[in-house]
Length: 302
Image (tube, rainbow, N blue to C red):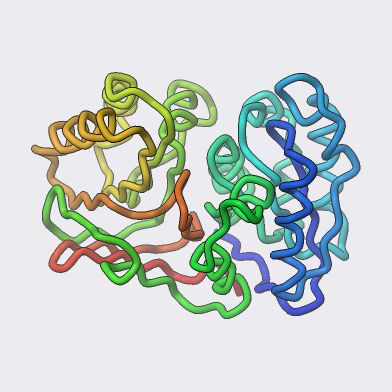
């Protein structure tokens, strides 16, 4: 796997919207966060060319993505928000060009499709992290969410334990492997396609939002039937945001589904559709332990 260079004060980064249309005011508020950590921020040309539920046409969103990666002055590419749309452009991406121009690529939710596609077809370490319009706006942002940008600059490994949030071991053990995954819905959508992720020997991250318990159960079984748990070395369960009643049902679904597995499973990570929302690299080596619960992730930058 190729790690991008660490970011430095003054580096130029580009915000693109490869999925749904961002709110202009929220995006402007989020840009302030990147500027405050010392980055020179510019916008992709078509970020505000909304077409219904998409930020712009497929051709324009693809153009912004390609232009950001092929620009030698750009060191990082941050996604404005999720929503829907990345699966529509994924088959047309120039993965060789991205392989030749490794940069920090940051997002989550619908961006899961691209995070994993870049790993598979460009051998690029990517970053599952809070997005500029949906997580860094004034009404939502938390200092811990902003601080999760720090490893992009410091090259330090990430240690996630009970100091960050209450963690619960659903299955005991120790697992080591490449960290992969992201949004459960997007991973489920990829099963049986060229974009189904390779979980062989990996630590698998799962999170989702506003899904009913039966939908979570169905998608987990879809992944299982697609062979995605056969050689997994561990599972990290991020946030599954729902109202209290539904969350109780979801917790039972997760506990029941993983009750007989042979690999460690830990829940309670504030990764995904939550605040704080901790950013982490995908594609680097990770170690998951359960006594006590702890996730150690290698740095995602050089």
